[in-house]
Amino acid sequence: MHKSDKFRLTAGIVFTLAALAAAAATGCSPDSATQVTSPALAIAGRATLRALTIEQRHRLETARARTRWVGDAHHAGMQVIIKSFVEHRKSKRPLPKRGTTEYCAVMEDAADAALSVLNGARGLRDGRSERLAQVRQDPNLAPCTKGLSVFGFGTAPLTAATPIRQASEPEVTGAYELYLDPMDAAIQGSDGSVASVQSRVDAVLAQAVSASIPDGDLLALASFASLVQSSAAEWNAFDWGGGGSGCGTSDGCYLMSVFRFRAGDKVRNVLGADLAGCLAGVKGWGALRLLLFAPAWEALAGACGVRGTIASGVALFLL
Image (cartoon, rainbow, N blue to C red):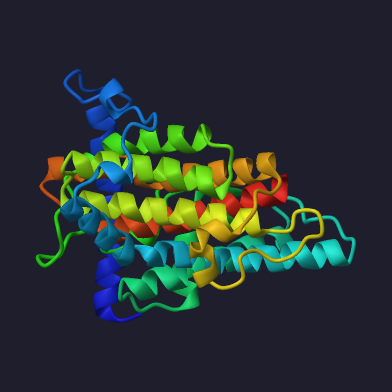
């Protein structure tokens, strides 16, 4: 690993732990903001893309274009999961149980595939061994690691390497966190179909843009949306009965309207796990500002991407 990359990884460890400590302190403070699910942010179809001005729409579409790689990363990881799933179905073998060598190998390969795309998009140079060291911090892989985690727990994976914002990047203020619970509620309230997920995520993003959320926070939020929309397309395209493939190419994951609704409950369960994994990896990062550090939105996107990918794979294997 290059010296600069080692510095980045070390910085990631330090500031990720600092974020957790600051977030815990903030959550215990009587003055901390707790109105995450306030009525003003409730998503009930009132905020739509049609209500945005031309300038606001352009701003949102620009953010979406810049964060598409998070959905691409999810797709890359899911291809590993789906390949294993299909092979077991065709050979009429049961899926490997959680914690077994085979199960762990599949999950690590999937997470590594996603992290390779995520780190590549962020300009991070690393090898498989470095990526696996990051992947194994994820709590969903705890049965696989058994002491491999450097700190003994994995509340935030080290995809957060280089969390410090560069001068040329927009600042993340933590405002994105106000929209995490509404996004989760929007997905939980959907029927799991591509159209339903798309419209509900659009409503959350439209609400954020209407509120003039800062650019760094909008990019972070758009990256989370990229993951969940890619997931909806992937699992609605998946042949649940015959064990066929998902949406094929990463471009296919963005052709949201071509997939008919399939296996609603299964899609909803995997999609919910995907988003939950993503959000678990990004909550509390806004507290870094209390320590006079501004996290990079790309690091937030990376944390969402790998946590969501692993959670989605775990959910599929446990269905």
